[in-house]
Amino acid sequence: MRKAAKLSAVALSTVAIVMGSVTAAHAGDYTEDGVRIRANSTTTSAINGLGYRSHTITPICYKAGTVINGNKWWDKHRNNNTSVTGYSSMTLLTKWAKTPC
Image 1 (cartoon, helix red, strand yellow):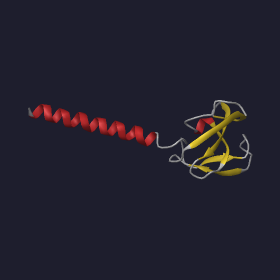
Image 2 (cartoon, one colour):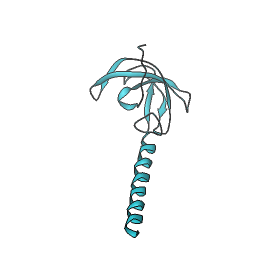
Image 3 (cartoon, one colour):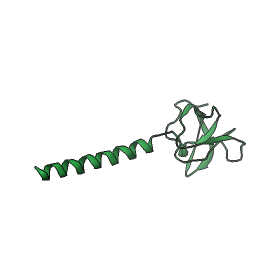
Image 4 (cartoon, one colour):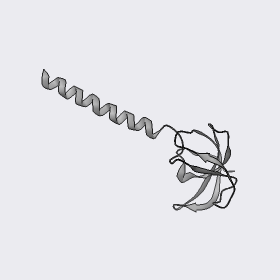
């Protein structure tokens, strides 16, 4: 009986740890803190604001731009926490627009 209780406690602890990490990873829609939200899909465009891992976004559209980590696609989106709208490389977002700009 004791062995079963210990195994149950270990199993529950493992589930709690796994579920906790999933929740933290999906807290927002940016993959990093301080993601630049730009006026256009280039790294030389003006910065309208910043996105953080805890922030969520509303995707608007996508288009090609400066290649970041081998990916040329940028997503125009609205940061729901700050109301800033602009472009960020899709490599820095967890969800993307489905239609081109």
